[in-house]
Length: 169
Image 1: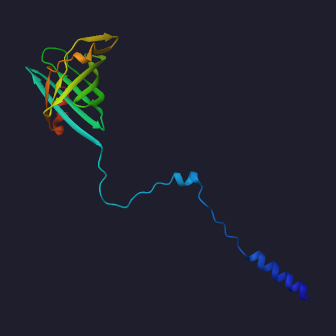
Image 2 (image 1 turned 120 degrees about the vertical axis):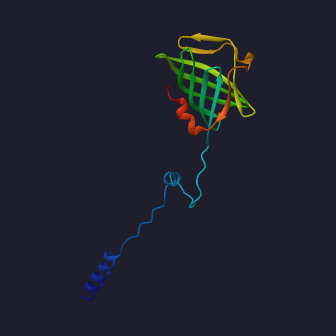
């Protein structure tokens, strides 16, 4: 009888013990963990917005640019007095003091694409002038190395007024 009680107590002890399972995080799981530092300081944006405007006689040009580490995006509008005006999006790069942009625009219901370069000097941007080639709806410089920066000269303006200047009138 003693053996039966001993065996029952031993069985009870083994059955009532819980096996603790410890998991070791796998390498895949550890790599997907993101640690967020506890701080109240704002995160600075890497995007810088600039706006420019210029007039030649009764014609105006407005540009809004966002520079995200050398990649430029934005909007551009030519408001011409007695010619077709145009407006659209610009995208490009900044290489040193040269802005190399592609202007995707609509003028009188027709969509087109044009290459435009600007030289940044003394806070102003000046449009490059040179021979162009056209293939389909794309217009680009025939020889960018021979550009003369004598075109529209645009000065910095406050971006808060840009929306008003950009809208059609």
